[in-house]
Length: 317
Image (cartoon, rainbow, N blue to C red; front, side, top):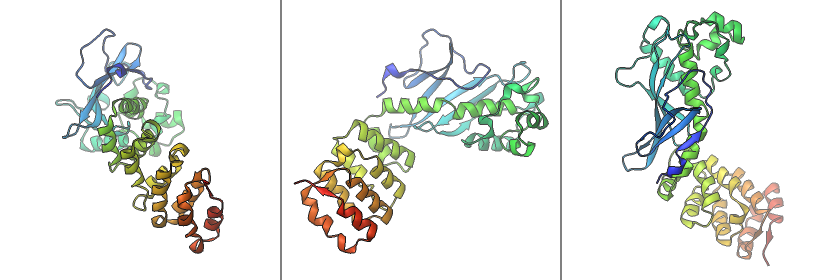
């Protein structure tokens, strides 16, 4: 399933100190694991995890990193998880590992809860926060120092850090939401066979469905099994997915008579906005002559906007 040639992907992750560092030479790694280069010879190992039926489910990485330049802070050991599109999911602490704040004070239960909330947010002040401007030990920076450097108020930045663990929050957040996400999406594209594609098309995660729809239109434009499954989603159960299909459906596919028949069969069941979108998509192509009488039958019940679009539809002679 996995293309071995895809196992070396270079990315730049915003960080200052070394992450999980490995030598540059050849190192034996487990099946379905991937080296991710972060800087020159420094790499992290990304692992592909499977669900109970043997299909790819998540990616994870065991991270080891220093949390301050002076060496006075304890290194962080943590395991991060992402979904198949590269969206951060959650973290786990390896057996015996803990997170600490300044002066080696261990995180308490509330600190771990807040840390999880911080990592779960893809929109954070940490994204643009320049930690290199903090004086001295990164972990010993106070909220007042942060306020003076960034212009953020202590109240606003405090929601994005565990006090006393500024650099830990900054480093791990950028790992969770950094360039590794794009590389994960590329890895999934590389390992996606038909079984995985079918699984993701039926997945409740809308991002998975949209990704698969786009991939099928690009890579499997003649695969009726995939296309029929996609067209079955043009309904009012999930308007966002239906709209995505109608918007992204290539003209080369829509130009086929059988596709036009399938799409038009959905028309009467669709909400108004999707009916309008369907008619607008039909403007760009010649429709099958077998649809002319069916489409004309809707004119009597159409409103002004629909009638105008229906009148502009052209049919093959």
